[in-house]
Each structure stands twice: as C-alpha cells, then as structure tokens.
Length: 210
Image 1 (tube, rainbow, N blue to C red):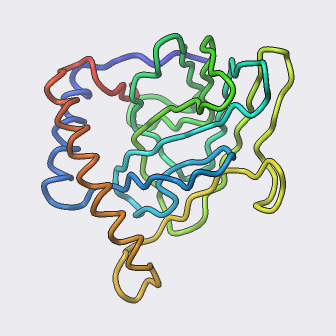
Image 2 (spheres, rainbow, N blue to C red; image 1 turned 90 degrees about the vertical axis):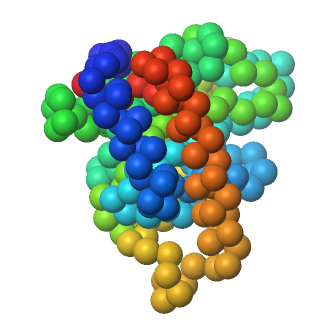
C-alpha cells in the first residue's frame, strides 16, 4: 500500500475545477446522515459523473475502548479524486491500481487515532460515481482491545454496509423527494464554503491522486 502524495499542479487544477463546478451549480451533496449508530457514508443520494464531497462516519459503540483503525474498501466505479486531510493523530494510507489520471483507489486505511466511546471517526474525500446504481462499501473497524467489527452486512443486520445511491439527475421524473432536493441545495452551499477554504489554503488543502 502506498501513501498519498501531493502533486502541486494537479492540486491547483483540482481546486479550480471544483470552484467552477460549484459556480455552475453542478456540485455535490453534503447531506447529513441520520443519527444512527452505524457506519455510514453521506450524502446517501448523489449525482453521477460529478465531483462531490463525501463523509465516512464510523461510531465507537463499545464501552471503555477506542477506535484505532478504519479500513474502507471502495466499490468499482466509485472514483475517489482526492482526500481532505484526516483528523489530527490519524495516518492515511491508500491502496490503488494504476497511476496518474488512471489511478483508481481500491482501499483506504486510517490508523493511529483514538476515537472514544460515543463519538464518530470522521473522514472526508472528493469522489464521483461513474454510473447510476447503488454503491456498497466495506468498512472494517478495529478497537483498542483488538476486536474487529466488519460493517458489511445487509441493511437489516447489526452491522450493515454503508451504501449510496447514484442517479443521473434529480429532476421531477427521478422520484427524488423534495427533502432530498432541499438537502442537495444545502449541501452545495456547504461544499462551496469548504472549497473556498481549500483554495485560500493553497496546496495544504485536499490531497489529490498522483
């Protein structure tokens, strides 16, 4: 597995592209997921072939231990473009196939942090789904006592796998609720604030693929 490196030229291009995407209104969703004690990826509904900001939240449910490691398995067709730097104390390692513009992230490991009981381990990345479908992610959570939780089951299980639904549009014929559309607008505004912060920080913001 290889750690991500920053390519300054691509970093600048990414920030310009993201800013243009927001101005055009073709951005992303940052929907706050419901407060369930499950591993989840937000937004749960997003647009195909558009760069969007996603958040992975994994709860520490066990008492008197901390979460020390999270491994995310990325489904085929879900292209991660770049990463928001992880929280302090966490180290990020990325496994990918290919290189440069052909790189495809297959697995991400965050380790070294300590998330206490009742709190979420939160990681963010910019990605775009390639087609209209439901994407299912695998998440493996390791606790400080060595126990492991695999978030890979069906929705009705105690450890359901996180999923998102990608759609080609959110028009009136897509069956999307008014609440989802409102959340899309709110999410677009939220990403706008975040992208402007990245642009102002220069090369210290998101970490694009090489």
